Image (cartoon, rainbow, N blue to C red):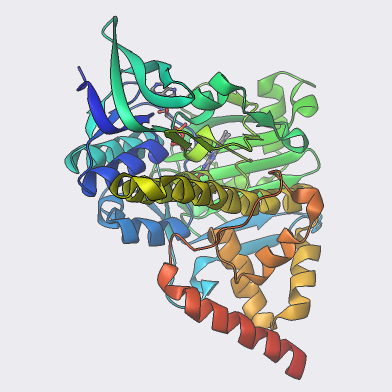
Length: 447
Ligand SMILES: Cc1cc2nc3c(=O)[nH]c(=O)nc-3n(C[C@H](O)[C@H](O)[C@H](O)COP(=O)(O)OP(=O)(O)OC[C@H]3O[C@@H](n4cnc5c(N)ncnc54)[C@H](O)[C@@H]3O)c2cc1C
């Protein structure tokens, strides 16, 4: 059984919950993490972004990640025969082109192993981790959440805490209790996916380890190698397209529209039944409250296009842990700190979801062209690849700046942006100067 009280209770042991528990425990706070499932367990979300390497390096988890034999990913291949949604028929975002000081790779992971690794790190840092322990309810005193009740081995117990972090992902324990969740109406997508075994990367027409994303008229297809032998393949489409046939028919038909992916599957066979995920695009305008904060998918999720989910989940978890750590040390400043966290959360998700809207609206190329009016050609390529690599919180990315000008892509009610790259905060001054110089080069040389 968990102890009866702690500084912080974390609901959920996915990447967001594990990282916030790990960081708060490292700061010396008492933390109880309650995870409903026994680990290891399947979870979707297998392709990581290079900005996660910078984040994991900063918080002390990079070596653990690198030591597990996950598949290195040096870029993303975006396929679009119509050339309307991406920059050419086959466009490769090469992470080596992000500019200096940034990791040139990320990893593709089997989430069962990745998530288990993170909760082990949280426990090793001193957090009390309880698997197979579902949170049943939130304990309230007036309008403040003061703990949770949970069930373990058929018995119901309580644990009280100064702060509760909701990292319960799509089940959104707090959002659902208070009715805070809103559907992103423009993004009502369905994902249908499965793993294939017998992978042989010599059939890959692109670069080994890369994710492939293939766009077609009714959605898109992903291919993510998660080990030397296994590749994850998924199809994403609007709900009405999904309803037009059986999942098997729609999956096969969409997959066959992307010959570069079917070529990579030569000699493979399915190793699991098809899985289906729906209604995963939502947000909440209130992501913090008295005694609580949301992190990761518990507060918001856009769409798997661009593979940013785990990055935004772990980046918000990191900021939440830093915020709650500071609030525990200085309770008089807690309201200001938590208000700032709320705006930080929204700043990153808002930018990521703009990138997704730009893809679905067929505006990615035109946004990049508009950004090119205020920056040199070389810098434009860097900004684009950085954004695809996870540059969601920088104030100085020209392409992100351009996307933030489009009101039709607003996700949240108006809020004050709080910038600050969670992965490379040390590069902020460099990036500010680079942006100013690129602007001058564009004007003086027409570059
Ligand atoms: C089709 C699809 C494809 C995706 N592909 C990618 C990708 O390639 N790359 C990427 O980065 N992201 C991807 N994502 C997104 C990614 O899966 C999530 O963004 C990420 O897992 C969020 O992490 P989290 O910790 O916030 O939530 P989760 O990983 O969902 O963790 C939440 C945890 O809370 C636990 N929990 C829930 N309720 C309770 C409760 N009451 N008590 C205790 N525990 C509870 C759950 O068991 C779970 O372990 C994809 C998403 C979808 C839908």
